[in-house]
Image 1 (cartoon, helix red, strand yellow):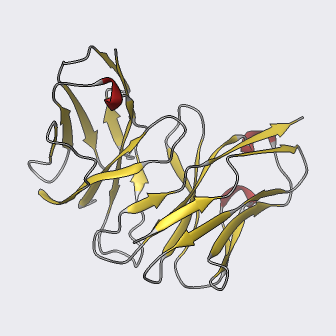
Image 2 (cartoon, rainbow over the protein chains, first blue to last red):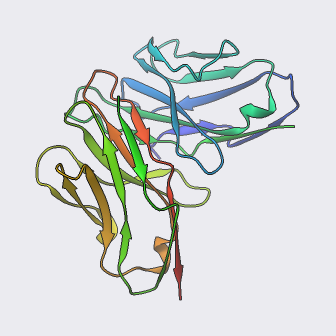
Length: 116
Length: 114
């Protein structure tokens, strides 16, 4: 399977703990995006990378959140001191820019985080 | 700034009848518009996209959408619903402003009655 993969698929943690998620994009894709989807809402943009450079971060991304893409391949999203409000589905998407005029993004299955 | 409003949070149809999901957008640029579908426990799948070519766009599984600039709308339709169409549908806008980040609507849940 050459699609976007995310690990783990599910994570249950206690408030105050740190968690880290991983995303493996489609291999030739140079852009990688993180989105967060809360229950009953559409996904919201968090941040994106072009190769290893993090080019934009949403105001939704508090100081407790950090994302990396060290070699321009896989990416990690870490949440420190988790809060119940962090419970959500975290989605990763990748694309090859500038292959086309609209930069189609391909999504992974997501990591569902539950903070108790 | 870009945004999307999906006018119906839930649509229920009988199998074999038409489906209409309504979407209005706001954009400062000439946007790209998409419809994505999300089945339970599955990833987001692209149904179709509008990128300033033909205003009537055909997608997978018999879905199509029409871009109407004067109405700032991008409604999704299907002539005959199938049980497998039961899912969450998202209307999405993206501006060619460098980041190409996607802005999603709140979603429309489609249920199909036998």
